[in-house]
Image (cartoon, rainbow, N blue to C red; front, side):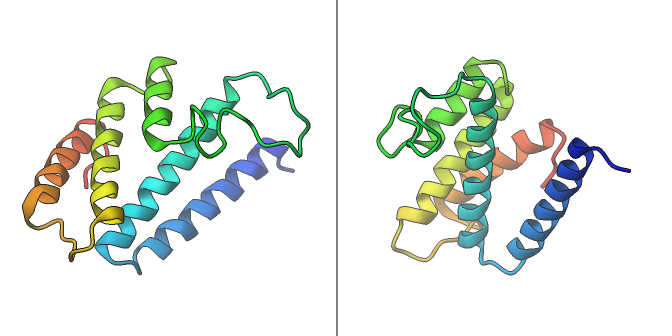
Length: 137
């Protein structure tokens, strides 16, 4: 019989598998936005594990993580995770590049491509750091 932790781990693996299968159906722009969003979400959850619970009730919004709160952005999640020693400098640098590419995707009105232009240069740096971290792309 599996323990709660083993069951949760298996569910997490299944969820990630489904997530990555869904990513395959997306455009370059969609993949970047969704991948950055998932990493941001996971960083946020890890950071919360190292903080005391907020002072409000369970139904109250956590003031640190609410919209316009001090920990409401991908950038702040990267920086706090690094400063707490939860991720390495190389990982933080890699996530910052992904964040910059995500911003190009999400805020640009023109067609997006990782094959040319500024985003292509950022993507090359992202690939090098990912390789260095053991996640070749």
